Image 1 (cartoon, rainbow, N blue to C red):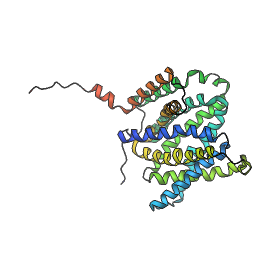
Image 2 (cartoon, rainbow, N blue to C red):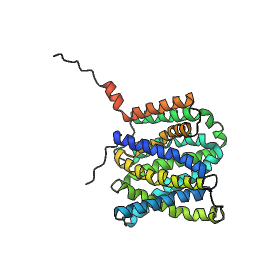
Image 3 (cartoon, rainbow, N blue to C red):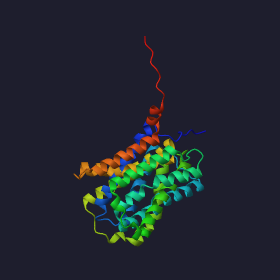
Image 4 (spheres, helix red, strand yellow):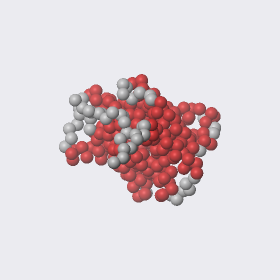
Length: 311
């Protein structure tokens, strides 16, 4: 019988969560650079396709057996649709209309959706006051970092805003659905999900982008696309499935609260952008929310003081 973690964040889980947030934060830099010369669906296809090839090579090098059960393979197709194909398409559509700032705020609702879905669909990841309060604090931090003015005009763009919320809902559903793969090696799960996503995206990219007509991208764009595939996709999804197995679905999706933090820090370090007081306040709120979710610091504060003994 397999053993799973008790859906709590321990030291190793926090490390995995922070590394995953870093990998997905830097993906925006890769996308910005590569996206200047490579069309959207072609770039996404390169991202998931190359990542799948890298992971297949890793599995072969490790001598891992490939699961062949038809039902399992179909579940990975569903996972690829829930976690890659559908939300990617919705996010690209929404971001073009409402902008990256509003999109990042709406994307930060993913933990709320995951918490609600997990409460209904699981026995061990129910809504608790601490987790709900922590997620709401983290969401408030994201709003503070991006700036509430980023949400201005959303009422006039109902469809794009709805598309972004729907993408966040799919992320929430997918991370709960990913619990069904907890007995399978994380590398195997990442490989199968990305392979399924590649097969679905291939005809879409060929029909929409017609990549054979695209001029040869520059070396910078190619390097960015490779970095996006290997670091922010193949390695990131290994961590993603390992984190679901260790810490549970609702803790794993907290990564969406940390991605804006990673983006701000990387922009400050790599691009020389200004670090604003609003961003600092947002980070403080996110950090407070995560401490509330973790619970250990609050537990220490509640612990009764035991009188010391002399001698």
